[in-house]
Length: 253
Image (cartoon, rainbow, N blue to C red; front, side, top):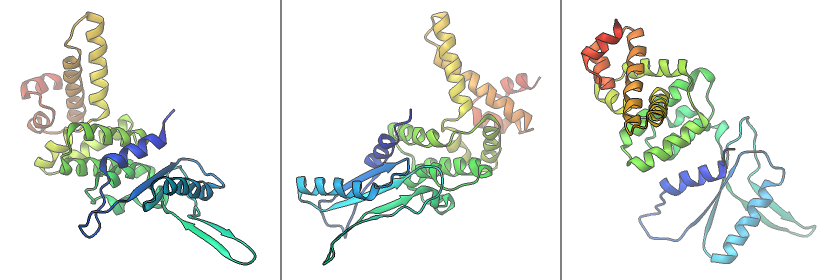
């Protein structure tokens, strides 16, 4: 079962930065990732806000991220009234991902918004375009390996392409400028991951430590075969997969 709350908080913990007029300040950010509709959610946010403020006595920024499928207009305030006085109005910042169009963030070059595109509003026919936009942003950002792995894992938890969509994605990647192709192709894809898993299983069965290498080679060949089916140029396939032209020619036969 997917731990949505942990995934969203891990994403923000690793990438969120706050600046205010270049002046140091203390700000506690309270994030709630809500994957289901809850009737009294604003009251819960107020309860958490109060507990945090009572403990630290510092400014608290409450943020609710609504990530469930479907579109709702969630309330973002909790009001306490008496017959004599409106005693209190508490508000929190809300992000309703399904009400946000992914195209607004396709050029943001922000790792958080890039990852969250996987839960935003897009049509089924746009799934490949969303994935490609994510990969292009990540290629430009050039994050370290640990953060790259984490953010890609988050994205694929919510938007994982099927085999036909991966074929379409590779065709789209082929249309990119050469330099960008090389950067994008380095990112994980289902063929590569599947090949690595096969290679590891083969290595375990044979008692070899070369399983991962075998998997990488199998993934490269499978990707090359897909490109050959699209009538792509041999030298282009060689550049994208790392295989020699001779090996690719043999596959073609």
